[in-house]
Image (cartoon, rainbow, N blue to C red; front, side, top):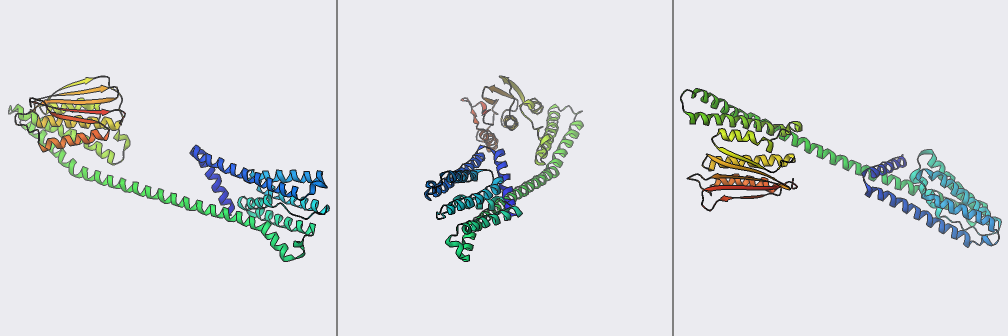
Length: 413
């Protein structure tokens, strides 16, 4: 069972590596190269042990055949894991063949065990169920039979024979099983950690969604009610004063009514975003909506001269919204802190940036150090710096006109 789990973990991991990118695929290739190194080293040592026995001096052809078989079987240790059982059986057969060859010609049996031991390890690590058990029994039997065939000193004492059989035929298999179980255990721990991390992220996202929904409800219940009431009362007052001939008051009430409706539209957009309605979030305003903004500002009594320079380009949604909010704040400053009659707005599309600029006459009683004005400028600065932009503002030398210039790189979005 543990071997099946480990094999499944490895196959799944290799599949994920292949799908995940070149770095993980390089790890798989590195493991294949290491397996090849182990196979070559085993083949070299086992071949050297056979040659050093001296069997080639009396039986060169038979020894060559056994040598070729040993080298081939050891190199097969680098083959895919599904060949582990076949390679182990071949190792047993070659061990018996080597034992018979050495005993027939009167040589002491000094077995080459490296390939045999690695084959036992692979059988334990990669094989599962009855096949794995049958393989370890076959290897143990082959190990004992080799000692009995040559009549070694080990075969004369059943305790030594048992110890030799267990050490060569069973221990490598057990080590392979342990390695597979440890790999499966570590893989389970990693998977559990990933699941816990995913659950934490899901819980955090759910908490954020619930918090945003709560904020949206509060905004709707508090602000929406009052802004709607302002618009309704302003409209009623405008109708009531229509016959009085007070054009200035009527214009002001119209501006209040228009601004309240615009505020409700912006509020609904923000509520859509807080509710996570991405399709509705696409209705966020941008530079294309400046005409509507200008109508509301003009209705409030500020005559705005609007100029567009350059060719309009498609902007990222976040940058487009930021530009709109900056223009909105610029015109609000001109309306609050200027003479309230005239302002100039320039939108300049340059190759790699967008420049916004407003110029308006200063009111006769204007205070350039007014804290409320600088709060608005602070908001513009923060929006601009978020996109790597720059802000310039201040009065002219004659202290009669106020200008604000914002430059935002398009690439900074």
